Image (cartoon, rainbow, N blue to C red):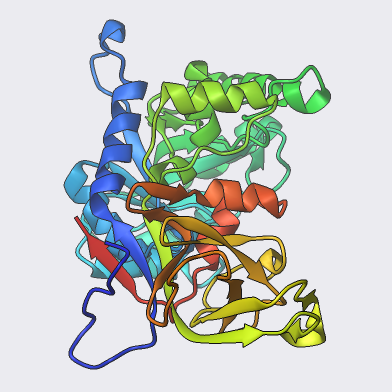
Length: 402
């Protein structure tokens, strides 16, 4: 697969592309679904899956992967804003789409128009959404979800503001609460530190707010809490629906202690979905002592053969990989040398026999039987996998393969 660039049309194109395996995506979704619906539970209704496709589907192409995930059985989708939700809708996705960071004043009418489910994280948003729903007309109320801030201190009403929320909701006749949720700050941490105890504290605050809401006679609808790390390691948080993000795309998040990562990977095996590739467009022999790239941060310690890839940080190769990262070439690791440029990256191919112009290099992903996982690359430069995946820019074509 990596040895050729699939056709993007009749004309020649710059040789950099991201190969997205829809088969791997469907495999990961099914693995998650089976895991959170163990047969021994015998639930009346299986837990739903809300697939996170924000950030252009973690760089994989939001509308495209949402369509594939809907076909594979995803129940809901999560995006950041109205624009992302509208793009997913326009690609033919019919199932519910949750706008995770809500809306700014004036944007609520677009959510109603495109049948996007708003998140309320400030009580004053209720009136805005209710007014937009009234203008739409019709007898059916517009649904929304309520976000509770349980300790992350980003978005959400404070758990102590449930009564205020209930009073304001009582005056809204055109909208309906259909879900309630919160977001964990550190669900992958299991140490005895404050951070390690934070998830349990967040759960307690959330369920206390939920009980107050029910005591006020309000049906919360779908309850959802678990992000990727909690899905794999904290079954007690699964509730009615789970929200996989990174694990959908083939990567477990970081866990502390490290033994948890090994346990998680064994518990829910995943397949990387994206492979970022480019071709060698030039080869040059560099003498010992010669510098390569901007500021000559790499100086050849021997006669060296340099391959130039047609991709740089403008395409999604993290700039911090210069002089410390590798690419897969002919089944071997080729070191990245020098500062990564916006449009090209240099690699040392001295030890790779018969390397030639046109050869395909895999920046992260799979190359036949070999894999250079994005999470390993991310850890090597002190960042998270999502950072690498989301960095793949719009100018990089996505090729969707079975």
